[in-house]
Image: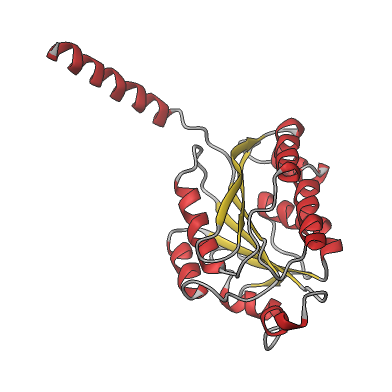
Amino acid sequence: MMKTAAAAITLLAWLAGIAVAHAETVDLLLVLAADVSRSIDDAEFNLQRKGYAAAITDPRVLRAIAGGRNHAIAVTFIEWSGAADQNIIVDWTVVRDEEAAGGIAATILAAPRSFLGRTSISAAIDYSLERLAAAPAAADKRIIDVSGDGTNNSGRPVTEARDQAVASGVTVNGLAIINTQANPGYAFHTQPPGGLPKYYEENVIGGPGAFLLQVENFDTFAEAMTRKLVTEIAGAPPSSDYAALK
């Protein structure tokens, strides 16, 4: 029996070694981290969800994926709010073609809203870093793509989380949504001194090639997200329309 058990353990170790050796290599590991805190109302939430779904299936994004060395990226989509509020909507999925992208879009559109709480960008970055560590594929380029309409008001300082991610070789990009429809009680949160884009540039984005895209309202979210994904996947320098990290 001992010999049989030892043989079984050896076989399992061998199989595990094969799995590691044959881990799929993609051009990019991408965490899409969407803010669903309480400053985002239901109409804005729906526009954001539709924007992500439209962007991942956009022909420009699919062409960018097909043009990479490995012709594939791996994507996971999470929603976040307060310090303890993070939820996986779409687990790691390798995208090579329209079919896989369409599956991600359908799941995003069908899932119920995860949270309606405070805003912890720092916890969102921390959680995204954990998801990158659990990715079943490998890539030289790893990006956390944070979208939000306000400042960090829960959890540890966002700069600490950002700096930890950057130290791990991860790039954090930002999509600052200018939410002019938010309840007046959220004015300081959504319109900090100097503006939300400046806040994101100074506190959220970081790492090689990090950049920030400003979205004027939720109605333009889909186009902004599409352009952002193309830039991230293709690795092209941000255009003058982006606020780039210095």
